[in-house]
Image 1: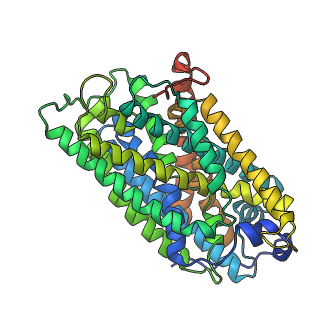
Image 2: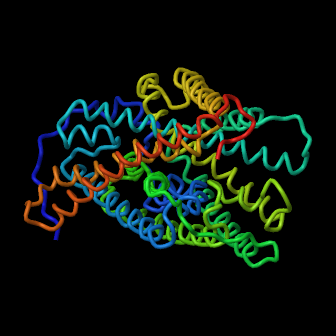
Image 3: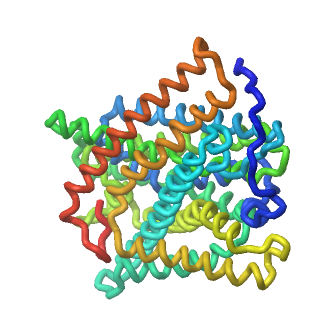
Length: 453
């Protein structure tokens, strides 16, 4: 049984009625299944296609163990955070922003800015990555239809950016609920297609030779293992759970747990099937995007072309939804600073700044996506520096500070153990991921036509 927390002093924040970011962007009208759609879009994305690549740095046993531990710990972590948010709501202090929750519970002004910094790094990084990978999907389809075509990767990134500018004008997080339901279906769709393609490739006469051995050098083996751990952490990462819970109609108590169960049901179905089938077929030759392994540069595709084409289209469409979800924190900050809550959401006074600011934000993300097409290596760094603090450390700290479980209790020590272990994993993961960036630096080229693996 979890202890009841004490009642802390009320947290002083801007009145919600005068806060355009809260009233407009983080509108609280959703049901628990809407939160499930948002959570699934935030976590179950095309990054799951890197799981076979993560397994190649760990092997079968450690790979399964790491994937399972990350799943259990993140579910537990998000559950604890929802408990803290529920407690604050019951105490009359409903928090709709991660930064306000952290500053309230931990009583530290610098924590407010620390969370803003980490969230901004994650959300902008995911926005850039979504545009880059969507552009790569278009380029893959174009290359199949016109092998000698003149269009380059940055042309397709510009096309995706233009689409993102248009759909980013949806004013509220809640207004994405139908898009994110479609995103959930797309993630199931391309996962099943990839699994089928891998089984087909693994049982065909052109099946690649399988080698599951790890690096011979102990140091290289260790660095690869921690890079893989960081990648898996990034795949399970969220970083915007309070903002998602903010979209729930009050009272939000208990609703988020139902959304989490929905999300993790999809995670269980998609993550394990993709990791196992991809690593089974390609072993230590698995690419950072398993679709690329199924479409080798030399020789025929290892799966039916139509299956791979539909998979790429599904991935492309879901990337647009992911880019929208992770932009909401930036839009909320923009709206809070630029909009007048006393005028309508679609009034000329608020509509023009919204269009300009959101368009500029998407153009900035598109520019960096075209300039820096080597996000495969950066994903490990993002996982270690961004997702690990927000998803594996802060929720346990917030729970212990809010509920103050006695030091003799199991829950106190399990929370402390998770914080210590993942702080160490984050530091080692950061070092190993940065090391890989440095080793691969010779492959990097600004505005390149190829995404570095």
